[in-house]
Image 1 (cartoon, helix red, strand yellow):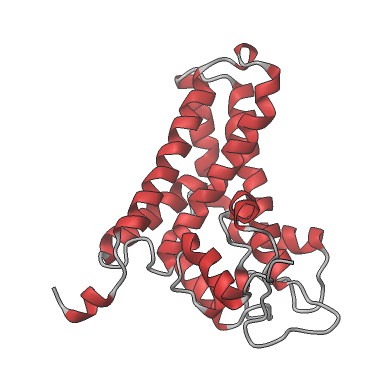
Image 2 (cartoon, rainbow, N blue to C red):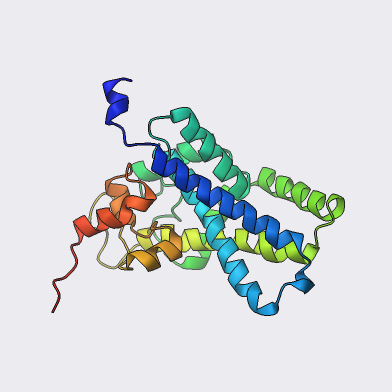
Amino acid sequence: MSGAAEARPSSLPGVALAAVVVFAWGVSLVGALRFPATTIPWFLWLPLIALRTWLHTGLFIVAHDAMHGTVAPRHPRLNALLGRLAVGLYALFPYGTLVREHRMHHRSPASTDDPDFHDGAHSDFGRWYLRFIGHYLRWPQFVGHAVIFNVLQHLLHVSQVNLLAFWVLPALASTTQLFYFGTFLPHRPMPGGYADAHRARSNNYGPALSLLTCFHFGYHREHHESPGVPWWSLPAARARRVPAPPPR
């Protein structure tokens, strides 16, 4: 093994966590679609939808880290394979296109050259979100999802209610979750302007809430400062940058 390869972090944590996210997403989806909606107690619907949304968001976080080479740092082909798998399950996105556009985002964050940004002047949530979704969700994704939906409903006889509640709704809710915590809050313009070229800020959530909201993607300043830090290490990066206040 070369010295450069030895200097890279181990691939084991990233691959293991990616496998957990993908496996949990798949098991929860199969379980949610297998039983008719009428047999699922009403008080479990909201927690199940919330769990499915969170796990769907996790798929994109895995793909995002793969774009930075941090899922399997010592195995680039495996890293790319896991990225393609995760982003394909997320929304049938073309992985190569997302890699190119994400690099543009890091080169010119919160500017008119940033594919994730609105137009550099407006910061209202609604228009920015619609522009964001319209940029990434294109007709191949709609056609592909329509085919999958009809195959599941008409050939595999999955309830339409189950498909809408536990597959379509979590997928759509996940786009809002990712946009709000990973793009809108970190990159929105502020009256005082941006602090530096990263044009990103982090939330002040504790690690538990940060994980629940968006897999630590809200520690966005730290991510832009060190894109090679994987999502599970962002709390440590945040703690180094903003030490906890001393106890009273």
